[in-house]
Length: 343
Ligand code: TLP
Image (cartoon, rainbow, N blue to C red; front, top):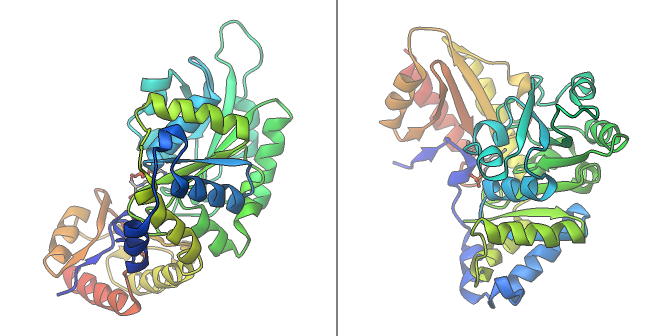
């Protein structure tokens, strides 16, 4: 029985080409700037998102932390969505390690923050108040249906921020999913953000690693912050090699994951007791609610017996994610198994 793991795209395994590249990778001490494979990945990444420089880090969480530590001093404030990964799923790192004050605004269902909410949240100069330093966006927005934010929205936030001398960081863990879903080159999304982090180890299937991208000065400072949080990785070319293959070969195929998510959503919507609007599925995430007596935990346990793994998101809410390794036939199998378990 093939295990059909739909809990996350973080479960993707490296491709044979990645393993081969890892075995052959030329390496050196990256803390000394001497790992040629890491240097090549960083150059490729920066070029891809049209920033001056990039920094290879261990995870998406570390990428966001290092970016926030570089943008903000202790006591500075970051405007962030109340459903943002940086706010809900990163162990409070910005506050715990950076003394950064999160000012949350309601995320709209499409993952955006309302422009008026942002304008109203930006602080003036007052001895009592923290300084608004940064606006943090997320694209695609994980908890908001995996929705992609558009180039126009990025530009609106960027213009608003820069008119007030505030910077913008985007958690682009899945920025390539957004670009593929919107049918735009990724730099159209990244041109209107000062810094962008993205992950190699989600839909792009590399085993480890993320990048932070920005100006040369910003990345030089981010390199110090990475060292401070223990992220200097020495012969990291072994894992960077897989990242290069990921960027070269795994971006365009994300469209398959989106098509599979759509097919899955349409099938799920037909199952009695499941509530979802397939029209809202734009990338590789499908969230659905359970309206009969079965709880999310019970459903997950039942389908797991048949080799289908799904993510429990809340008492009656499930998240399923499509990715490399999940084929069209697996979607049909998962639908059959879930349908049976709902009876
Ligand atoms: N998200 C994971 C879990 O942490 C929830 C997942 O399965 O979706 N930004 C975004 C938008 C993310 O979705 C994630 C991971 C991260 C950052 C953190 O990346 P890692 O796990 O590499 O630290």
